[in-house]
Image (tube, rainbow, N blue to C red):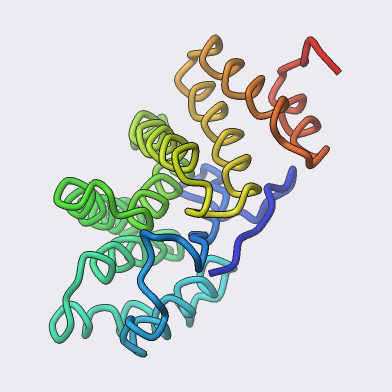
Length: 222
């Protein structure tokens, strides 16, 4: 699955008057020991994931089609991965809903599904990525899920540092950046600065320095 670099001007959608940046696509290395071979995944699931990823890029029709496929897969070929993607796509339905009440209802429904998957399968990397990204993008003042994002980001960082085959280095750097933002969202600036300092000592991409500076963090080195 493809991944995007963080941008200082990411895509966004309005969530009941609040601007919410779009979630990124989950990115798990094809060589990851935690990932099944594409040949082992049902064709329908691979198609649903592709539609889900197109939906993340803003294709509302793809979101509807992904939801339809994943709803069927939940009945015919249920797996934790199917359930995790179903939870994420329900959140995307909320993102695209016009009615504010439906937006909140779909977000809560999707989060409930993702929470259930992670509780039952805490080592499922894709579920952690999906939930972490959804929670990171939701407005903290309404959903209070930054701490969940922080939990998932710490888990993913720890797993990558144990085995860097899990996903690309750029995705690891992105998570470190987002971890700092999530801490900032709940006013834990010491922890935010620690995450960003670690990021800047490791990341080769200069855009991360610009991004953390936009967050108000001035590096004390380099």
